[in-house]
Amino acid sequence: AIFQIQSGVCMLFREILLSKGFREIHTPKLIAGASEGGSSVFKLQYMGNYPSLARPACLAQSPQVYKQMCICSDFDKVFEIGPVFRAEDSNTHRHLCEFTGLDIEMSIKEHYFEVLDVIGDMFNYIFEGLNKRFKKELDAVREQYPFEDIEFLPKALKLTFAEGIKMLHEAGYTHVDPYGDLNTETERVLGKLVKQKYKTDFFILHKYPLSVRPFYTMPCPEDDKLSNSFDVFIRGEEIISGAQRIHDPELLIQRGKELDVDPETVNLYAGEGGMLRFGAPPHGGCGVGLERVVMLFMGLNNIRKTSLFPRDPNRLTP
Picture 1 (cartoon, rainbow, N blue to C red):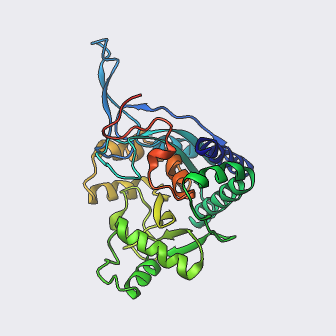
Picture 2: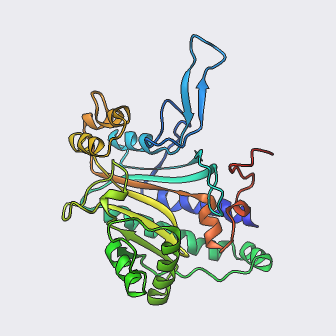
């Protein structure tokens, strides 16, 4: 039943995005460098059996670069369902080394809230679709792993990061830095506070401090300490980190220098021949792990229950 529901999430994800004019794409998972400039990648020798062709490569952490290439090529709105690889020694209830990513990227006409609105509509459609079309399977899971139905609002709740911090401070968590990031504990506390006040398990937190976001995140035009970025939460756990991307090559180069990012990573976007040099519309997007969505929708306590063949730091078979 769990994996029928997992299949249903993919089906509903595809349905809602196609109805909104998105185009499905398929991007490579064998790449020449780290997808997001990170170090937690699975490294390999590409064509290692042929010395004259052998060169370093890695498995993709994210399809972000390719999604952005598509936006720069006038695709307007794209999505992908595909494998994601993270070489992180994270032995937790919610991390896997390989998972299925549900990714979107879209051009922005006026404001990055357009991305947030798509995400809110998308999850409401998924939640409603699972409740209506997969009731039998949900009841079967509930018999073995009892859970309360997820609560969500007709229009997804959006809170600023500052509003979230204020709620935490008022609840006694005064140590939380208004210009720092939230940890797992404070995310859970905030999830409970939001549930008590707004009666929803699903919400979007936006305008994160710029200092805690990747170099390619668009700074907030009203406050240069903040950013046009967001996280999405279900039952007090973060499932998505996303943002409007910087589409101005000079600003991206500047941000790369400020954060001491590898110039090769920056040049892929903004160097001579980089994708942004040919013109790019304002755009934004995000990615979410399929297994994590299924786990949190049913309130399960471990992501391995929603992965058919889990891959974590200690498991490579079957």
